[in-house]
Length: 286
Image (tube, rainbow, N blue to C red; front, side, top):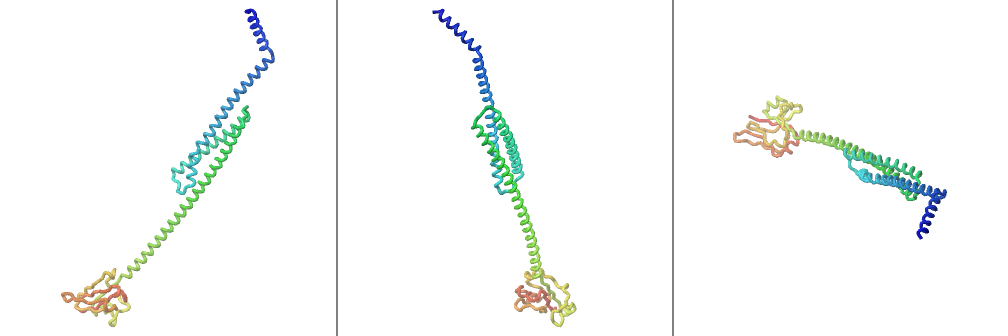
């Protein structure tokens, strides 16, 4: 029995040795080795492609917050502050750099996929989607640039309009102030009055009274100026009596003597008293 088992083992070894040494076995072994190598190569290539795909997708995700901020700013109406402008510029540059990086990586992926032994319709579809996303985000960035430029233009126009309106308001205010000054000056002039009293001889000598009435060409420099006729209530005459030469409505004034027998003119109604003339002439007797 032992001889039989030993014989079978020897035959098996001889058979195996003959098979391994045959050309058919060697060809099959070479093919198997080639398949194993190809599989290993495909696995490495697939890992590289998937790693690049993940990196491109991560890049797209990393610019989302910057895109959201730019979208929000582009639809606003407030004037951009220096810090906001700095962030816009930085976010624009960030998105531009990432999109350029993704563009190069997608082109590299296309080339690798063509040359690799990996044949996957899903990978091709994913790559197509990345191309579309790249195009959409590139177009979106261009749109954001245009919107921000329009917004800047609109704000600049509004600022210019506000400046013009402010200038107009200032000009109108200046005109109103000047007009009010003229009105105030005219009103002040309307409130100004003058008076002069003296004996008959003094008034005639000064050409103020001619033929018992107010002369036409009297010297106004000799009159006392009243800045506000509404505040003048009485004029002491330092005389025993007085009478008006200038014309003033009856009832708007009266002559009153003090305890010393000196007379004074009291104005009872300034508006009525000064209505006919702003020059008051009183003849007194001392």
